[in-house]
Image (cartoon, rainbow over all chains, first blue to last red; front, side):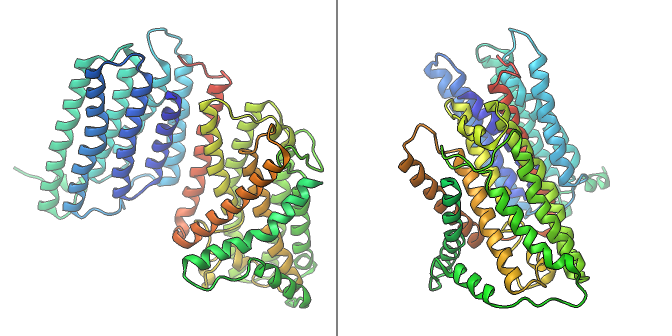
Length: 209
Length: 304
């Protein structure tokens, strides 16, 4: 069952490369949050009530409700509709995301280590790589926040890959990092949008003391 | 023989159901389900008119187009009913047979010397080229999954039993539906009801065809839809089912596919022309993910 969610996660990465609407990015992040819950839920062998509540809060509540809602408010505040400034055409982005996914699947295959759960590693590595790529190709700061959340989702999966049990402290730290990161960046995007009437990164070079 | 008969029956009603669904959604009076058949009979009665700039190529192209599709139809099995022709690797032959028919139509469109038709031919060639990897990766994945390389053996031995194989089935159906839409020049890629030549793909290509030739092209479209619908039904129908249950499922899937095409055309806007290539490439990307899934199932990629 875990594999189904892993494959679905890989398909969401392809849709991230394909879509150009800001609204669709947020929608895809919501789906990714739900998929992460599915991955964790079906991979835990024996579940304790505290762990279950924590995972539920982390994936469904934070990743799939709070963060997308907050990003949606930022989108409305700055009147963002469509990502027009992309450095790389979408056609090549799709090829690149397929290369990322294939590469990380093959890499997982060659990692013959009992300590690592390679099935999570497949999409985790692809997600981190794609998040970085997503940030590089977009000029808009809002999309950088989305890319950051994609990387965080990848790191969440990596934490599953390396630990046989959920390391609680690590997860708490990631969660704190994510919420603070998105909050601070969201406020930052709003301020930039108010000051310059645009959220493109080249505006930042005009900033002075 | 029975599979051929079933495909033909489905083809006759397919476009009728599509236009019925579209009319219902637009709150128009629904035409008869046989309306496309009446239209084609009317076209058959008319004589064809040929432009003086065209050569023999233009006259034979619709015939060859129809013949290739009719031949391709012979390779498709329905459930446990055998196809008429079958050999090792026939899906490659099937794909290039359809491509050959399309090539003839493209050449015929160029033959007319019209700028518009050249433009349409150009687009059709590009989209067909882009959708080809998706078809081959998908069929290659199924061949790897089952261990057989002909349509008949492949669908006969395709047992979706484990949870991971269901996702292969679902994703394959999704990709096949859209491959059918691209191959038939339907909604997300091309709008068959558009009035402007500049935004047409397939319709502008057959602008000069009339009467008998146009009727053959229309029937070709029905058959193509029916062929792809049968391929989709191959992922659902299991050989262990009794024959009447298989036939009922086959017609059910055909009706559902036709209704899905009607719904897609009624509710979805056509993609921008420049967005089409990337959208079609997405199908290949999903096909690659299906391929990776098959590698996991067949233990070619070992994960723990």
